[in-house]
Image (cartoon, rainbow, N blue to C red; front, side):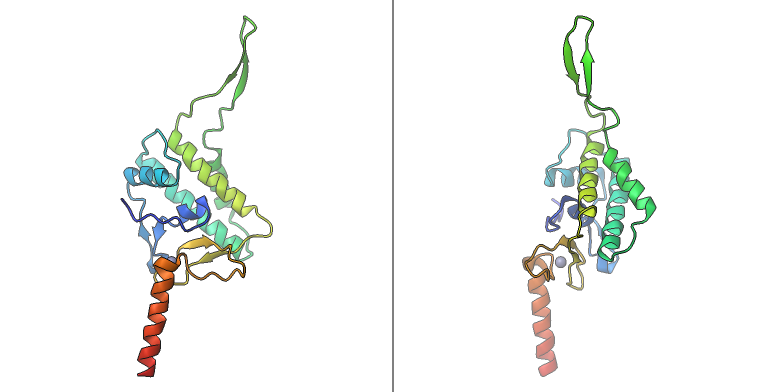
Length: 189
Ligand SMILES: [Zn+2]
């Protein structure tokens, strides 16, 4: 099992957080089709289809577009047009072929629901739709970056005072406090 974390508070931020340790240039977790399949299962989007290398590239591309777009919104800046297009394209997923009403020669009426031809793409579309819903939220909520010097995970801050500092107390909060404590002791000695 890989080192997945689900502290983003939003599906799309959990995807962003598959690049860990962003403060240190990043540690990529989506390095193979099998690991993308594992992540999709982890977030409940486990698809029947087996991801390909192309799906991994699409997921990484979508992830970085979401991260840039969310950071732009957080800073009150404009989202780059290319990122809007990329997210919209990903969100279309399998919806090109819509559900249709089919009326037979014998008068039978049925709903035609096309099978997703690419279930992995459909799963990534769900992540893109989540990003669209987050990005379109007004006023834009606080999406914070974990303050621990080695972490950099993104998370939706829903704390009452909107002052949450760490992606998780267990992972980063305690390490950061131990570090501060050590620094104070060193300074005092
Ligand atoms: Zn953290």
